[in-house]
Picture: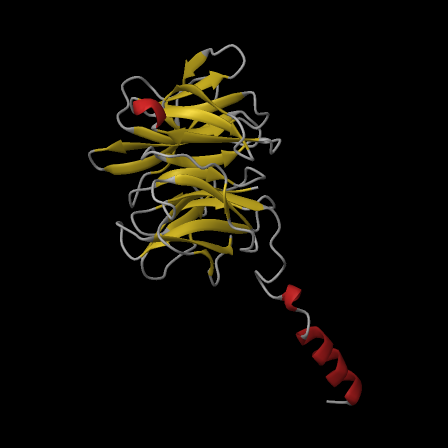
Length: 278
């Protein structure tokens, strides 16, 4: 190999951004952690820096399932404040907070005007201006959970648990018959890719992705431990998820290329769960 080629190879090898997953990770990740005692909402930059607690308060109430609003100005979360589980909204700096309704596992609509959430093991949507609610899951379906709004606002994915196990379904956001996506290996916790082309979900132990029509099911994590609560990065190239030694935790937060690869540990210490990346 001549000197010119050697110089070219040296230059290419010095560029870490050409390696899968090595490009700088932008954005913020909000999550729930018990590192300060009770479960509270925390935030960290996607590169793992600037870890901070968003809201501080006394008591043993739990704040979980945080999600940034589409405009980045608010965070939706579930809380046991006041003695009963409800859906709450707060400013991203924690300066203000308000209770929206009974329920949990809430997620914003793409335009931020509505939420999808779970109440009494059924899935509903709620208009944030007038408070009107609509049922998404059929009335006679048992144990529905984890609603996730599609990027185009037309559909909601959710999980339903039957005697034979969990399944993932997609239903019209305005109501209608759900279509089955996948019902093997305890599939649950669906979340859409930013372009709506894929859904990430968890099995009893691992993270997978699948097309909304049920095709091209792909295993993303296959290593030891238990992986849960995965969501896409804003550009759809990566996933953020939780990993525990067992189902009892403790839980750390990792990121991994959406197509699979080597995971990178992002947040450790106590238990850290329910990440959302914006």
